Length: 219
Image (cartoon, rainbow, N blue to C red; front, side):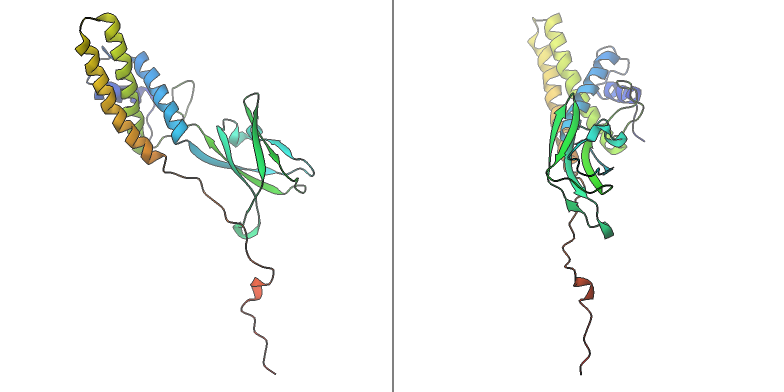
C-alpha cells in the first residue's frame, strides 16, 4: 500500500537520522515532498484514458470536462474506436483555455462515434494539499522519499548559512547529502520514466481478408 503524507514524513526524517524532527521539521519535509512529487509528475505521470461520444459536425471538445480527465496535465493521443479492438488514430490539435485542455478535430465525426482520448494525470499523496489517495506504488514511494531528502538537505544548507555563516563546512555537508540523494532520485526517476502509455494499431485488413482461406472448387 502506498504511504500517506505522515508516513512519508516519518521515512524522510528517519533516513536523515532525525526521527524527532529537530533538524528537519514536518513543515520542511512536507515542502520537500511536494517539490519531489512535482518533479515525478513532470517526468513520470499517470497514463490514463477515457471515451468521449462524438457529436455530429462538432470539431472542438473539452478534455477536462470528462470526469476521468478533470485533472489532466496534457493530452497525448486520440483514437476512433473500432470493432475487434482495432482503433484508428485521429488527427487533432490541443490547446489550453482558462487552464482547461481542449482538442480540435481536423475533420468532424458522425453522431455517437466513440473517441478514445489518452492523457496524463498527476500522482497524489494522501494528506498532501487536500488529496485523499496515494497513487504511487509502494515500490516507487522510496523514489519520492529520496527526492524529498534531497530537497530537505538543500533547504537545510541554506538555513545553516543564514544561522552560522562563519562555518562553511556546515552548509557544505548538507549540500553533499543533497547531491547524494539527488543521484538516487535521478536514478529512480529514470526507471519511472520508462513506463509508456498503451498504443493502438489501426485495422489494416482489406475487405476480403476475411475470406483468405476460401478456396474455389476445381471443375
